[in-house]
Image 1 (tube, rainbow, N blue to C red):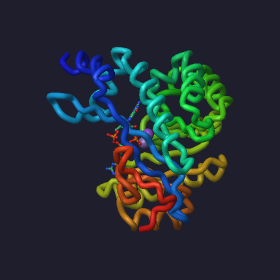
Image 2: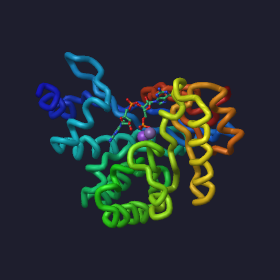
Image 3: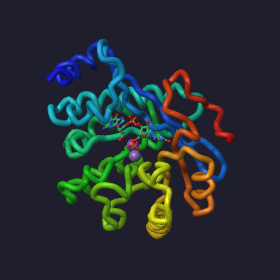
Length: 250
Ligand code: G
Ligand code: G
Ligand code: NA
Ligand code: MN
């Protein structure tokens, strides 16, 4: 397939880059971090989104070098920020089950000089679904490095309440699908309240993704959600264009 061959060359030819999307404390607007989001500028086809090429990279194993490039680039770029915000990096399930991950994370932290508490890794439940014993062992090793780990896209896929009990996640990210305008109804509000209650029970802060309106932010504030991310707070932007004022004022 065209895309698979092109992807192989994308790394070499510097066609990949990272955009960053701000994460804020709802109560204060204070910036806590930025999520790194992978972008591919194909020389002929133009921009190709990660939902299109990550599954291909996972199939052919390229996700390992690409994922390592993402991790190294995100950590290196974060060291150039004026403020010591966290940088959140998405990990594919394929990377997470790879035995080398703790060594790679350690090496990248040493080489870039980023302090471990500034790195947050985002995992979906698909990463821990296959072999939970092994996943727990990996999570403990990663956390032992001083790095935090967020459970991404919560409420979709394999979401199980037992995951929150059994795995020491530092943050729950409520999937953005619950905030898409078509889904705004009493059922989705009930789901959001349920996730926030779970977060409280397990002592894990909750971040709501995909926040596009002030009404959504007010609702989350009223319900006691800690953090938010979404177009309202800031769109994903190139390194040179992200604000570093410390606070998002709406
Ligand atoms: O940025 P965008 O909305 O197009 O991202 C779409 C999906 O791709 C999201 O689920 C996001 O988590 C995923 N994604 C973005 N960047 C990366 C990355 O560097 N690694 C992995 N594994 N997934 C990513
Ligand atoms: O699965 P993950 O949470 O990593 O997905 C992040 C993706 O969500 C990014 O590709 C980003 O472009 C997208 N995104 C971020 N904020 C919003 C938003 O407010 N609305 C929508 N529709 N997409 C968003
Ligand atoms: Na993510
Ligand atoms: Mn997500």
